[in-house]
Every structure is written in structure tokens, then in C-alpha cells.
Length: 110
Length: 122
Image 1 (cartoon, helix red, strand yellow):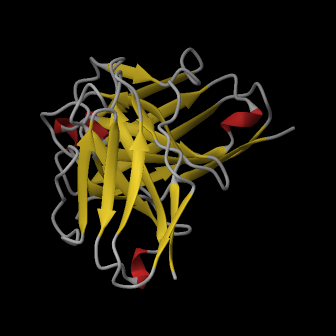
Image 2 (cartoon, each protein chain N blue to C red):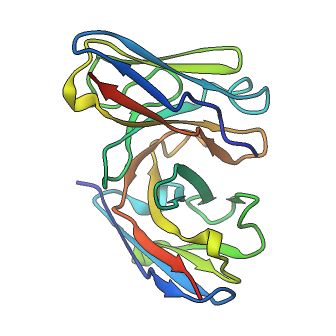
């Protein structure tokens, strides 16, 4: 199973909105509404930000939203803040009952 | 508060074995599927294996299938990863993680430990 494809880096100024794409195939993103997104700050464990494609866990800011179209999922961060600077990973359940993570995107707040 | 604490990492030579443990607290461990995810130094996340609450459904990444074995002891609230025939490319920080939903396979991983570092080197 090949990793899902994400841009290596995305940047934006405080207050702006950015979107991170995550491209898979018909065997993962295209087959299930089971995409999750994780935020990881340096030397910290990943944190779940979005699950089942569009849902936010309790405690996650409403500035984070998820969507999906075909075999591409997206994470949008609105009102970008300095604390959002981190690595972000998408993840999808697959048709072989496994999980596959994305290649990761470094978000920089300018 | 959910807590997951991994242990068992260390430095090991290629071809040798290592057993990782993860002790859980703060939630009904025997209701939830559990996962292992690893991260090589400076690299991205890689899913390794998962195990259903009753140990019936087990899945592995292709990169570890046949060499790693995931197991659990619900009475001890513990998850394990037996790693055999270790390779240099297995060097990584190994996290255990809890599935968000007790009922939905494939859901997000909502709680993670801090990881245990495995270094495979001669």
C-alpha cells in the first residue's frame, strides 16, 4: 500500500485560510468515508484533529474542517494562528482492512 | 483521563527480536481495538498493525507481516508487539494508539502514547 500523497509544505499568514490536500486511490479514500487528520508538533505524539472525513473530536477548534471529493481529502485551517504551525498527516482505512498514512505536510505560519 | 504508556524499546542488532508493551488506563480497554504506529527519525507516520478488542481481527502492514505479532491481554490492560527478524529499516519511534470508536472499524486514532524508540543497528 503506497502512502497517500500530500504537499510537502503549505504556508500562510496569521488569519488566512490554508488547505492541505491528500490524494489516494479508489481502494482507500475513494472507497470509505474514513479519513482522519493528525497534527504533530515537534517531539510530540500525533493528535487527532478530524475523523470520518469531516467530524471534529471534542476540544478541537472549529477552525479545522475536513472534506472529500472522489479520491482526494482535504483539511482546511481557517483563521491561521501561530500555534497551528506543525506537521499534518492524513490517514485512510483501506479495502485490505489496513490503514495508510499520508506523506505529511509541514505548515508554516509566516 | 486516557493514558497509554509504551515500553520495551532499545538498541538491537539486525536479525534479533524485541517485544514492546503498552499499558492502558482511563478507559475500558477490553472494548476497543488497538493499533501500533511507527515513525522513523525525521520521517512520517507509518501504520504497523491493529488488533480487535477480542483479538479475533488482526491486520498488519506489508512491511512487517510475517515478522511482527500483535497481541493483547485485556486482564492486564496491555497491548504487545513482538518484533522478530528486525531490520535496520525498522528503526523508529513506536506508538500505541486507541481507536476512537468501539463500534467502527477504520475510525480515527484518538489517543496516543509518547512512544518507545527502537534502534536496529550493528
